[in-house]
Image 1 (cartoon, rainbow, N blue to C red):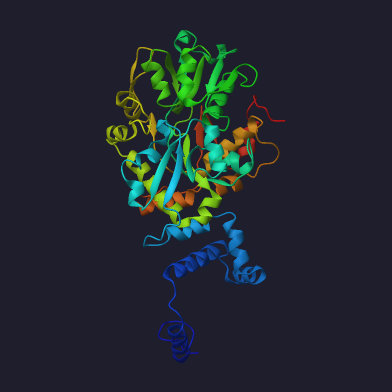
Image 2: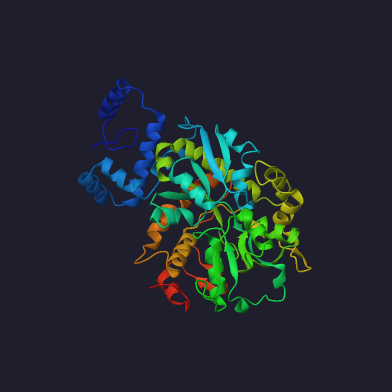
Length: 447
């Protein structure tokens, strides 16, 4: 058969016949065409061999195939993000929960800077008292999306501490940016080996704070569940609890470590970047249900948060960031206090004026290796039982591909890969060998 002028293996007559039929049919919706293109690309990526792909589609049908793929990939959000023109927003009026801490900086600053409005969204930022309430309001659908502690969507998806509900980490809100702060009376007692009997505050069980503090204590021979008492304390109450003598210290978010120094109540014993430099803390995320019902809205919200993260990461932008997040509707903290946190030029309460430019960072990439590490710690300390399919859970909950796409769409070059090795207190974590990593610890609560 002679090739048609279009280059395909059909005759010119067949091409003309097909063109006539197409012209006689209703005009195709460009968005539907784009969606079909993306679906075809996903199937081809998963089944690169033509014969295998045809057998798969013939066996299960296109609808069943896409349903199966959608169970592990947020296809609807990918389709919405693929549109060059802004799509109609399914739900332009949104409630987004946040805890008033510096970890929520990108989510917060997107509001006064007009980044939500630019995307056609009317976002109400709802200041929320504690992490348990954040979780409950997401489960009850009172909030459409939320500021999360990065382990929370993993725990919620697995039904740990609450009924199971599929959640996603769309982006990391901040890395580093936490500290271990002790009461001023402990200035001469800074060796963790001597902390048996201490009461130490953490903001939530499924938090990087809990996992980093447990790791730090165990590395110094202290068993977190028997040698000390770990007490759940809302971030806003940490300094008051320290001042009242109800806790000896806390591993918590900013600005409350600096606030304890500011008030003369405590001192900064250790920045968490000295435990794990580049560790994740908080995240922005939402439910699978919200993404599936509102893909265009989710894509717009995602763009606003990613753009805010990139802006917050720019050198020299920190003073402007402070002015955006300090007012009463947001953090309600003095600019002087927040500037010490954001610029890394601070007093530590021990008589030192320190300069740590990377005290807090805003890299939005939700590395799936970070999720695997969190899952290992959930298993290490008895929160997660039995066999764990680490990569399957990490890849379902942490939306790395989408984050990279939005970063690229904002004009920034996203990093490559999905898994990284991480170094925590001198020990390398290889996400490909999570069980070997767990077996390397002498202190744990595994059955």
